Amino acid sequence: MNYNKKGYIVRISENALIHMVLNGLEAYSVLHECKNCKSNNLETYGQVWGHVNILPNGKTLYCVEMMTVDTSANRTKNSVEPNDDALILKKDIMSSFWPQYEFLGDFHTHPYKKYNEVIEKRLYNFSKEDIKSIEDYSEDWIKHKYRLGIVLSIAGMKKKGSKCPDWINNSTIEFTLGNYRFWLKGYITYLDESNMLKVNDHDDENIILDCPAVVGLIDEYSKFGRLVSEPRSIYHKSGEI
Image 1: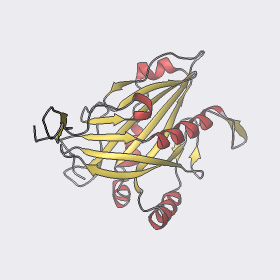
Image 2 (image 1 turned 90 degrees about the horizontal axis):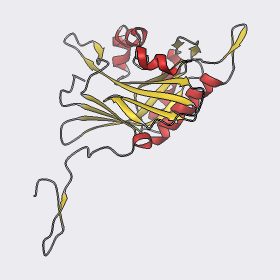
Image 3 (image 1 turned 90 degrees about the vertical axis):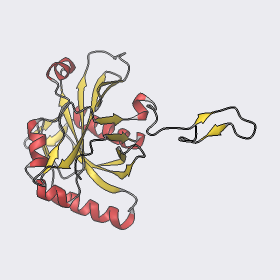
Image 4 (image 1 turned 60 degrees about the horizontal axis):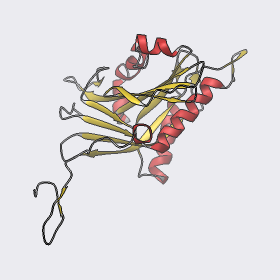
């Protein structure tokens, strides 16, 4: 789990994206029972599952295939505290019945009322508390093979937006659904010189977030063959040209 200098690609499947958006929007828009009150604009929390590949070019590919929500998490407008037992239970179930999916890391939302403020203050990034919740509990997360953190920031707008989906930077995608604005951000973790878990920098260009359901297919992950004109073959594999 040392830092891969050749780079990382975090690929979010459409299925995982749908669950992130639906659960994030429910916590954002629908009133929930809280202590002595009802509230919306709550954070939500869960796990991301999938698999890991090393590409021919040496990059690490994290494929996020599904996302699960912690119904036992203690949620507020400014924080979310998961129940440790939930992860233990889910990992046990997944390894027993759906072992094709491994635990990659976690997911949570950041709910905001003003979308302009999110952009101006870069609130789509992990907060200091988010980073501390990983790095300060390094030994526990290492046992669970925590490798990936995803945050979805949400803000409402007065009217339907027309902005096309796009990257703010390599690891942050901004998109609009109706009059909701979203920012999807990916972080990776790695072991430092002391074998403690570290979270990558906010603007690390070595981390690429890919979500084809939002931005379409990006460029090839590894070199692809080319069409050629020859008597017996019109296609050559990469490296044969």
